[in-house]
Length: 281
Image (cartoon, rainbow, N blue to C red; front, top):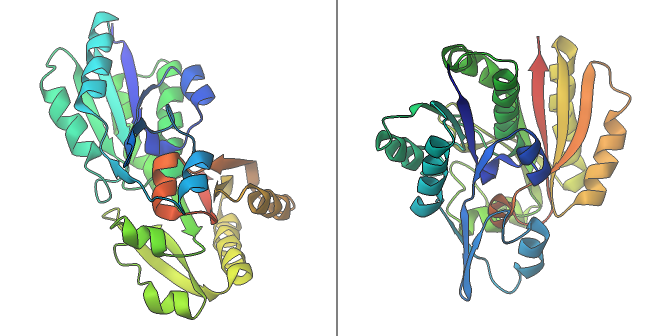
């Protein structure tokens, strides 16, 4: 009989409460300051990251090999036979590859590592769907076969107050920034098929950038019923305001707020706002 475990990295933006409730194993990314290293979501919060950005912009790195090895050994000891790992885009992090290589050293665990090609709550939605399928008693093979369909129905968009932190972290990809900052142009950013950031469009000023975000959602709602999450990085009040503005829209099945994880907050900087959209067929 199959006993299936689910591993996610901390870029997924799922709360610790949800992770515990869904019996998900969390693999934290690492956040390094000059004075020490922290485990993402475990040792440090997103609010702490934003509160310290003016003093120091920390570095982020892959989950530790020790943390990953402990999870895999624990799973074997607990009688798990299969593992599904859901990861942040391989175009933005080496986490996918590190998990894949580690699992090769554990042949007793039949495994599948799924590169979502996304990040933040859109990645978390994939993980939630997998957790639900495990709870429903679906087989490993059934779940793996459904992953591409789950993923194709999820998209995310975000806008930032400044591209300064994306540039400092080397995560800017095809997002052009310096001139845009000077002209107060706010990019609406998503990821391409390779999981790399790119700019969908630009808006002049904060108000217009939020309007653009909402317009993308409205386009999806014309064709599909959707679950929607408002994403924020150190911008809770603005996120609440956006959420309120969405409540009257047709075809929204559920509506919630999600805070960007500490490690992603390092790169987005304070003031990030976004939307995660899951089309429900």
